[in-house]
Amino acid sequence: MDFTLTADHDAIRKTARAFCRCELVPHLRDWDRAAHLPREVIRKMGAAGLLGVCIPRRYGGLGYDYLSLGIVSEELERADSAFRVLVAVHLGLNSLALFQWGNEAQKQGYLVPQARGEKLAAFGLTEPGAGSDVAGISTTARRDGSSYILNGEKMWIGCADIADHFLIFAYTDREAKHRGISAFIVERGFEGVTTSSIHHKLGGRIGNVGSISLQDVRVPVANRVGEEGDGFKIAMSALDNGRYTVASGAVGLIEACLEASVAYATKRETFGQPIGKHQLVQQKIANMVAGRDIGRLLYYQVGWMKNQGMRCTREVSLAKWTNCQHAFQAADDAIQIHGAHGYSDEYPVERYFRNARGALIYEGTQEIHQLIQAGYALGDRVDKPVTQPLPSYPFE
Image (cartoon, rainbow, N blue to C red; front, side):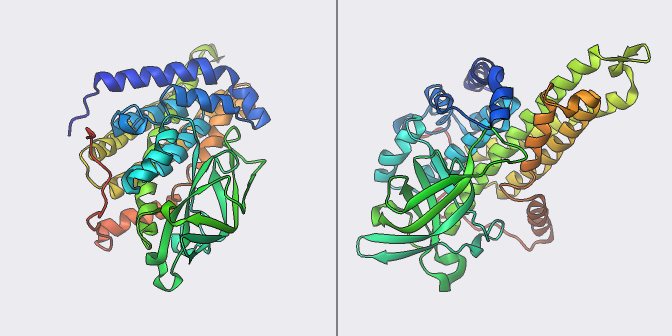
């Protein structure tokens, strides 16, 4: 494995960090209090290439590699989780799924404007009664001539109320169980599509999360991604990409906690000296350093594997599980270091703590990832060859 960063990696980190410093950081507390994300910011993210960083240039992206996606995710979450979540949903879950599974017409019609940031995309898998149990979804798609008729409800969908395109998963053959799930590109303008936002969330308040209602939505056959029954495979491969952004983003959150804690520990004094001189404070800071560096190596490994065209389901699950645990602990310790100040939004660590909690649930709960890792170790889980692998880097 070679984790040497290239000039492209350095450039995209500088671009993402500068974007966060100029366009995001000055406004984060106000946006968090208002639970509002201005659409203009999303447009600027697209113009900067952050919404298509690892999509080939021929499809409107920057043409950088998959490690670059991890670096962008790290930098965005170093500012606020909502912006990394936006990239996870739009690029990791939707656009990369189209890049891997879509036909040329779908790539030209949907992937290109998404990679350019002209259109925003979402991923419609989770339902009110089905989260970790993907096969438990109840949304259906019935073939009717040259169309499918979709009916169902999706819940906890990132960008639900602001996205232009949705990748929706529905049963075309319920008797086949998970092998009867298919995937469809659904446009917001299709008749029968309605969305709403979920308000008063613990964390991720800047970002949009909501529900999608599908009532007799007619979707052209041309908008089916892959063949009938490919939906489960498409969803699982997309989740590998989404989990990669969560794992790399968690490193950015640890970094933010570390920076805030070091700054506070060097100026805040108790008992006649900076609190950073106290060993128990040093222990918390040292743990943040360890979590950051271990987490970065874990997601660098996944990025390298993706560049080689290798399947990384086990590795990305481990990175997501481990890094999110470390991020939540770092946020908790950051509040403790700040004391009473950390309990208010006077300092950003309060927001980091709220945001870190969500990552222990979405893209696979901690418990699901423990089962995945145990399954591999016990030999109960063995990866099969991927019929449609994610294209390796460099792209053709």
